[in-house]
Amino acid sequence: MPSIYLERVSGDYGFVTTDEYGNEIKQDSSPEIGGNNFGARPMQLLLSALAGCSGIDVILILKKQRQTLTDFKIVVNGEREKDKEPSLWKEIKIHFKFYGEVEEDKALKAVDLSINKYCSVAETLRLAGATIETSVSVNEL
Image 1 (cartoon, one colour):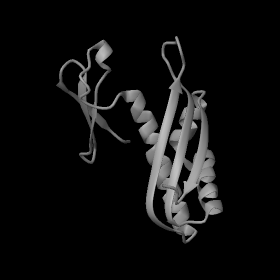
Image 2 (spheres, helix red, strand yellow):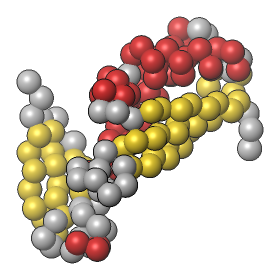
Image 3 (cartoon, helix red, strand yellow):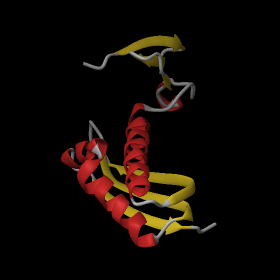
Image 4 (cartoon, one colour):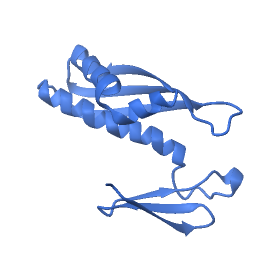
């Protein structure tokens, strides 16, 4: 079973979490409640996890399709529920940017497979009520 260890290291809410492999993530709360921007907000980390999970899937799929990526970027934007506690992610837009010798139809298929079949983070967010919208660009500046 994976393990995470949290330690407070900066102010009231500045935490470092460490996994069983020694990888660290800095976290903090917003300045409005006493944080000091020491690290990412926990809810932002969910969007980051979505990008990472889907990014791994997409690259694996494109490698199997013999596509040659020279660069790859993902931009994720999310909107949370208003006036609710807890305030969950409601709408998430994720844009995939592909660079290299990549056929657009294969990029679209890889994104669809990741978001709708393989990415556990996407499914977790969907089960919590979020909608996830994707878009793709290939070799656009």
